[in-house]
Length: 400
Image (cartoon, helix red, strand yellow):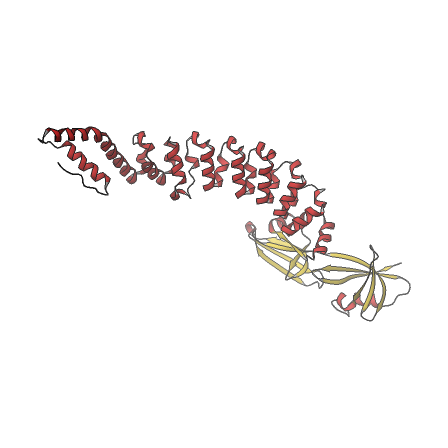
């Protein structure tokens, strides 16, 4: 009797077995009965294995042949995996849930989004959808509303990208507080995708601006005046200054000691800005021009203290420029003694003392002479501008 030696090539073993089963022999009856038993027991299995290897090899060499092979092999993981790796759309033909899940979770497919190639019945499967989202969050866009209403899937998505709250079904987005909070903790700008009522909920607004201060743009005027909201917003992103009322903007900048705040180029294109920082100096914008397709920006500006003409050039739209805070105060002049001038602020009546030499770029300037010359017939009012740590007298007026 021929023996089948163990071999690593299963296909070769099957061929050897087929040869044994079909050979003609005149052995003793017991031997013949054994051969008959083996033939009956293994012929079908051996033939099936041979067929598998034939079709597997066919798919390896010609992936499109997966469309033509018998459907029974659409449930064979080896053949399906080989076909899907080369042509992902073949997964549409697979009806076996276990095979589908194995293909999607395979380490070799971790960078390949297969969800769009699934059959309809599998696209609605929550477990399969969850697997797909671990690989590619963008698949959430194409999921059915029934899946986008699922709180577990919504949480899975917004934990990774809060802005995808926009895609969560309205019923879940507007009613599930856990989904809302999770999205805002990941990205405060997701606040824009909530209803007007929810945006102005103190808890949600505070959560959003704590993560990204720029989210303050989406809340009501009343909440924008709340100290906790403003402080949290400025602590996380000083772009929040742009969305504050000018009076509050200067108030908090003075309290915090901020000299400037960042400004995205996209806003400069859309709006007129009076001041900008150039060469670390506060400047007044004279003119701004853009190159073709808005790739470069050229700003002509003038130093608000010295009057020097400066130029700012930068690439768009990635660039961020800075806007200086500018305070203007008016004081009554009480008296001048040497280099010291005592002033009373016109609005608050606060008395302050300043050095004359620090208030003028040039002690021989006309303004300096107007301030220091004695005039018994009227009181003097001095206008002082403060910006970026610099204080200068910009005008001297007569009161009375």
